[in-house]
Every structure is written in C-alpha cells, then in structure tokens.
Length: 186
Image 1 (cartoon, helix red, strand yellow):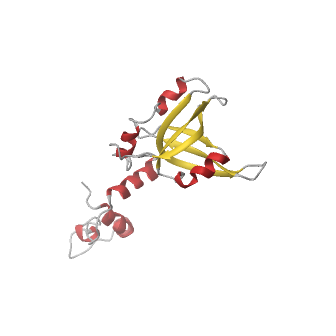
Image 2: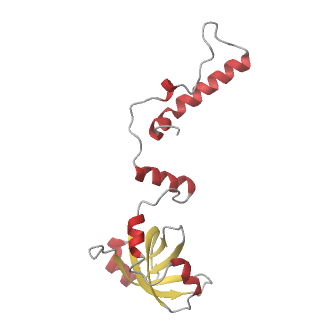
Image 3: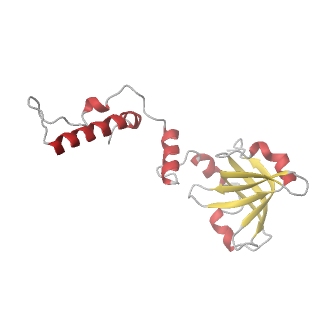
C-alpha cells in the first residue's frame, strides 16, 4: 500500500531531510509567503523509475530484519517436498531417545567449520531449520565432511541421515550421510 519498496528506500534520505527542513522552519516560525506548506512526502519526492525488489529479495529483507520469513519462504516448495522423504520432523525430535536413527531435512541456516585438534581435519556444526522457523544442530565429523562438503552451503536444502545425541539436554544429530534433495521422482 506504500508503493514500490525500492523507490521508497532510495527516496528515504531525501524524505527525512525534507521533514527535518520543514520541522526547522516551523520551529523557527518561518512560513512561505506564496505557497501552502510543502508536503515532504509528496509524490515527486518519492517517484523514481526503479523496478521493485524481487520476491526473493523481499524475503531476504524479512529474514534479515525480523529473523524469520513472514510472508513465505524462498525454499518453501523444496521444504514441503522433504516431508515425503524424511523420517522425523524437527519438532518431534525432543521426544525421541538417544541413539535413534533419524532422517531429517531442512535448510542450512548456518555452517560453522572448525579444525580438529588431533589431526587438524575439517569438520562442521550445522544449524538446520524448517519452514516453521524451528532448527536443530547437526555435527558433521571429518570423514563425512570430506565426502559432502560441497553440499554444506548456507541456505541450501539438504537431507541428513544420522542418529540422535541428547547428551547436552538438547537434541543434536550426528550426521552419517548428507544428500541434496532429489526431486526427479515427483
């Protein structure tokens, strides 16, 4: 209802400056003799010939400013497809016992890579999230990391098979196999 978001974002500094100028003039008691008060939010201040943001850009802004996707999710179709190939939803993992074999899927929200102290091998701690904003940490040890490191990219949708570890009062998945989603059987 406010118009083109890209135009508004570009015009924002100009609008703020105009508002401050009008406020200063009003505070000083200055008014224009020949025109009515100038509207700082006039159409000419905002109108530009700039195309609006794409839906993925708008969703990225939502995630950045709100911490979650509000209107939709850029990977929603892939995340919905995962439901047909996983064994457990993220929200149901807390009720499972330690050592349970699980197959979960989701989007990589963060990937923290580290090197082991013993052999200086690379491994990773992933946070995998779903379309509801729920997430779980997954540990990817060096052998599995080396096999699947090309898949461990932030914002990509993956499937992780492994077992549940609950030693820290919070469920964590120890990854044994990682794969990209395969939609050829849809």
